[in-house]
Image (cartoon, rainbow, N blue to C red; front, top):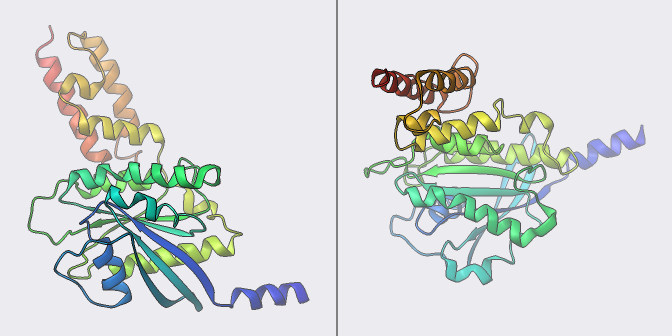
Length: 277
């Protein structure tokens, strides 16, 4: 009985957590995380983070007081030697990219690789269960052309078991919702012995489905889309189509972008069969 009561008492103690934000320069990490959330303001003029920017805030999550230390990592490669000291003992990571900059989205893998390199055997990027990751698709309010659509960003995030949010540091859209869900997941992690609950890691679709959607999205022509060589026979085209159709049919695949990928496969098959005797 005493043990049970002590556990309940401990669960009500203030929880101290460390959060870091990562992403290329000028994607809105500082204005989104440090200014908009911690200081409730937006800085319209870009100010480069010099090494590390730091913020502290207190929040109430599930009737629990959370004391949060947030470290914003400078995005420029020049500051690698400064930021590499801050990866350790982290409970939460926020990855930020600009939806109008394809390069900033494609760099997320490099940021994860850098983190893995610094943490070494502590972390397995392909099977993360001791850190909560949230991906912010930032600057959705921007008037410039959007290069990374929601389904692409969501697929990348959810296939890794990461949380995904569409945000605007300028308007504040999605910021509070992101942090509430993010902190709630960290509380669950801490209450579960430092590992994410199994239900939080279940993504609902397979790596094969995610990889197929990405390949279809990036294919250069109909042959490439179906995964067959130019000059393939009708039977080979139909066989490849059937495999992808079963894998990606919207009724059976919940992966983001599966519906568009399925339609693209149907159109690719139709186009190829028109020119095959």
